[in-house]
Image (cartoon, rainbow, N blue to C red; front, side, top):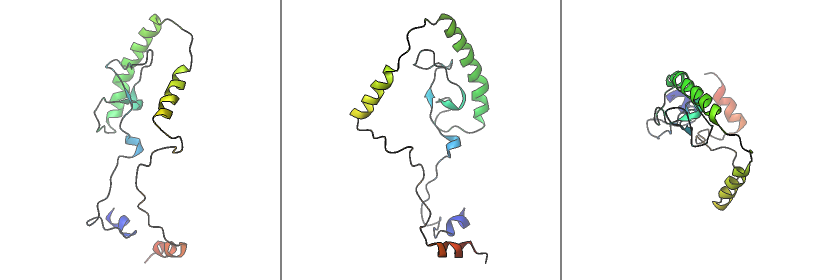
Length: 136
C-alpha cells in the first residue's frame, strides 16, 4: 500500500489514510430477535441481511455461522408464524407514511448511495497519467 499511495504523491507515514470495511463487510442490517424475527409481523431475517448478531465488528468467517444457525431458527419461526397468521388486506400505506416522514425531515432523493471513501486519486492530465504508467 505504501508503494501504491506513493504513486499518487501520498506519503502514508506522514498523512493519515482513512480505512473503511469494504461493502462485502458492510456492518448493520435488520435488527432481529434470537428466532430471526423482526418488529414487522411475519418478517424473519438471517445471514447478511441481519445485523447485530456479532456486534459492529463482524468478520467474514461469521457469515457461515449466521446462515446455518439463524437461517434454521428463522425458517422454523417463520413456518410456525405462517400456521397461525391471519391474512388481512395488504396495502402500501406504510410507504406513503415513510415518504412523508422523509419529506418532513428534509431528506433529499438526489444522492443514490452514500459516498463511502474519499477520492484519493490525483486529478492529472492524460499525458502525466501515461508517464506514471510507463515502466522505469
